[in-house]
Amino acid sequence: MNSHGRQSRRSVHLAAVLLCAGSLLVTGSASAQTRTFSGKESPLVVKAGSQLSPAINGSLVAYVDCSTGGCDVWYVDVTNGVLLQVTRGSGDEIDPAIADFRLVYVELADSNRNIWLVDLLAGTSTQVTSGRPDPSAPAVSSRFIAWQDVTGDFDRDILVRDLALGGDYGITGPGPQITPAASGSRVVYLDLAANGAVKVYDAETRVTSTVFGGPAAEPDIDGINVTYARSGPSDTDIAVSDVSGAELAVLTLDGFQGNPHISGEWVSFEDFSQAMPHVGLWHWTGGEVFFPAPAASSQEMSDISGNRLVYTDDRSGDMDVYVFEFSLSTGGDTTPPVLVVPGSIITNATSPSGATVIYAVTATDDTDPSPAVTCDVPSGSTFPIETTTVTCTATDASGNSTTKSFLVIVRGAPDQLQDLIALVLSFNFRQGIENSLDVKLKTAEGALDAAITGQRPTSCNALGAFGNEVNAQAEKMITASQATQLLAAAGQIQATLGCP
Image (spheres, rainbow, N blue to C red):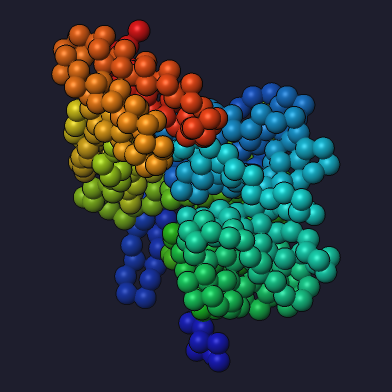
């Protein structure tokens, strides 16, 4: 161990590597063990024109579609193949990154460049930057949005938006700081003024430390482990270190390798040693290397999440997006999948039938890249006005299964009406206005039992009278914002009751 506290590193130089599925004899100091690598490649987005820059997190893949003359950001769920367009602006949108159902990208419009954030669960878009000189290379994690930009001294620095605490700040230093990547509370980046060193900033400790002294390129981070392309005298190699600077493994192949991405025990990379670039998979804790895609075509722009690798491939003449799902097994599989279901979901009814509820359930497995997930009430179903128990099961290819449940609570008109009464009281209207509105809501409340059994006129008429008075007092005794909130809540109660 040297003065930087580095552990003994594991270095691998393979004269031959494995293509697609097969068995590899891995020898250790104590015994030999046979491990089997298997996987399946599937076309994800294949169409005329170029599909670029795929980024993956879990089952969601974001990419750039440049097939229509401009470039727009889309995303696709690899479990069902559903494609959704994220951007529809007049300019180009590029450089997507995705994590925890958050997607960031760069918008190029009217000579301006801005970063946008899309919350895929909420369906909302937020402009992150405005008036910045040149924001680019965005990254996102559960804690941060990070990007590089030109600062006042005309150097590039890393700027960060803290999604947990709020506020923006910079990770600065003499000379350029570039190419951020984020994981949890950490941001890793290159410091070009320090010999191209790989550095990491930890928001929990507010400490910046050096992972590798450089020169290096294209760092990526997953938890406490960082991968990067390490420059040598005549080529580049891929390395993995932890955030303390301890070098854990180095992949030494002939020629140049770059663009590494790390997820758990795997690193994806691009091999430029041949006439065409090819994507590779490196099991950095065991030393195995695999090239899963056909050698006759070129692949670029790879990313990895769990047991899924995404990349672009030109075998059809255009750049298309493919996914490769893989596993490395050491024997019989008896471990069930890990199933993640949401907590209790509470929502208001939007009709007498209840409410449409969309939820996310994910499963991962140590050998099966795509365990099957089924739920007895599928996401997107209409849930009735009551408490419904949803039971989901994940099953892997070996038949191991995990079952979990969660509650979906759909609130009916009585609960919503209580919320509306509380909202009226919270605005502290003049006594006469408050009493008048309250009387109408109490009339509606008193008639709810009859309304629920199908006799709706009294409640519906009272809610209509409430809405009429709000409209009459809007921008007089009631502000426009307050009127909007009151009318929306009353309208939803009317829809729940099925008022004409």
